[in-house]
Length: 89
Image (cartoon, rainbow, N blue to C red):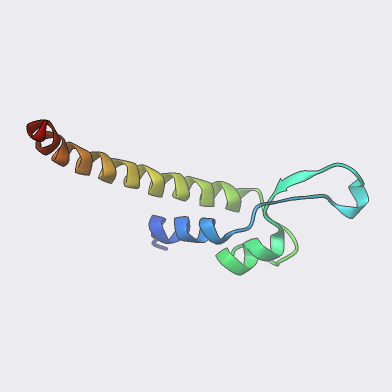
């Protein structure tokens, strides 16, 4: 299965990150996506009531890869424009 890191990054941007708690835990709070949103956006896991531990880690790693690619691309672009900027000073 080929993954497009930029597509995953776009999907990460669409994923709401909330503060929430399990009803049974009372006041203990968590931060992260809720399972229904995660399942709707990524279509991973067995159902829309839980999020496995491996799927968010994989999504995060692919997102980091996309950000790294963006950073490398932007760095290359800035190196291209640096001589032009220095020449104009």
